[in-house]
Length: 127
Image (cartoon, rainbow, N blue to C red; front, side):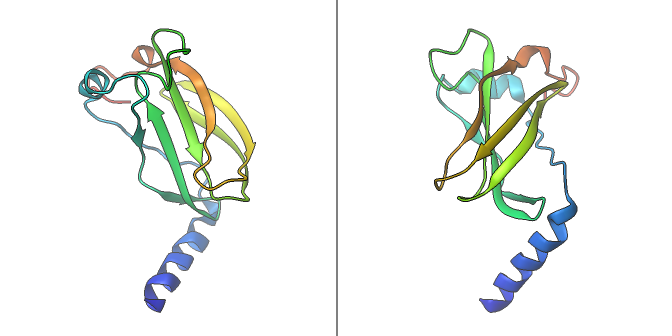
């Protein structure tokens, strides 16, 4: 158990220089068809900038009914007490997010992130 904890801390320390993380979602047309508004996908947890337990959250068909038709929602979660300044990307579209995470499992991001259909790689059916 201690060895696992040490390995995890070493990974976080090693990843302190990581500034960019990519999460590729394959079969995006199937994902869009199978997820209703409010349903989301979570990325695997990762370490970035020396911070562990970071996770991305994508709502392929928006996070709520107030989002304009066709827009997708994207959020990020950092551990409680983390102040983060990040740039989220979907394809070529980017949005800046700055947030102080004061609660566990708190998300910050953009409900109207982008029109996903404009960012899909049609050859690989992925984003």
